[in-house]
Image (cartoon, rainbow, N blue to C red; front, side):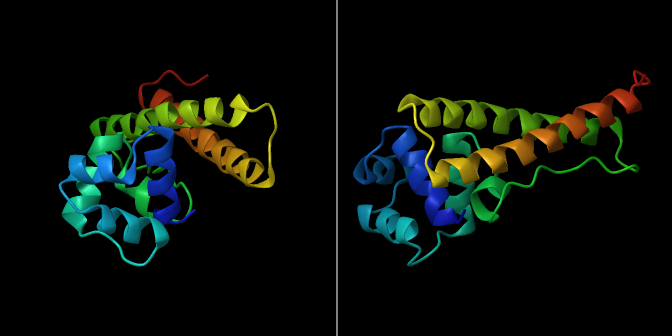
Length: 140
């Protein structure tokens, strides 16, 4: 999913018009329109603002597919916890998306693809939790 698709999805799922979002981000409605059509991309400071506004990571906004940061063997516990916190934010977004998908009672092809992406993300989050448990000596 592209930045344009993610922004449009976040905006519509949160019931903002382009005009309302533009006001919140202090940009023109035309800027929002260009971002959502892929005609242009926002500056990095606006990407950070969008990320904070919707409570999603910049990776989520900018990468073509969700890529939860995996914990590396040399990561200390603080870094592992930070990665987990990032995945927790994604869990909130995933919950909202699952509700939106289930609302009409039908799963179309686009929703099926998104469900597969969500499954991959949940697998990554499970690995993060397992890695934290291992670092804490709580592994089985």
